[in-house]
Length: 101
Image (cartoon, rainbow, N blue to C red; front, side, top):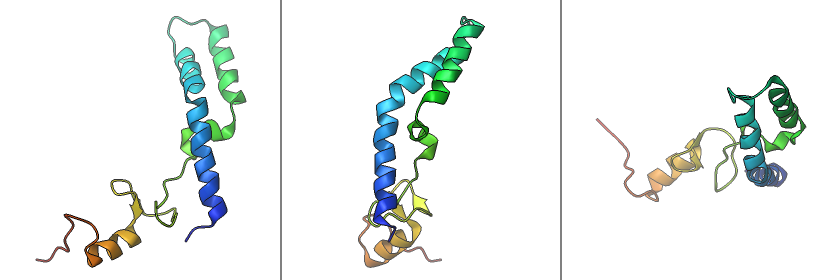
């Protein structure tokens, strides 16, 4: 089980990313605009630097939706590999069977 503070911090980062997504997209488009001037590109670069660090989606962490484990998360299911194995063995995941050959 992950610390509650780490889970809460990641949830807060998700909110911040959503809040700044439109502004960030606008600045990134201005940065690569072929018709833009050097001054507009420089202003866009500075604008991106002034955004909060947590506004970057790179800082988000995929976590297990049940206990918050940060590593080995299967994105298709939203749970960690450890929990996936336990749930599959108990038959809690429909359509998942233990393979044998």
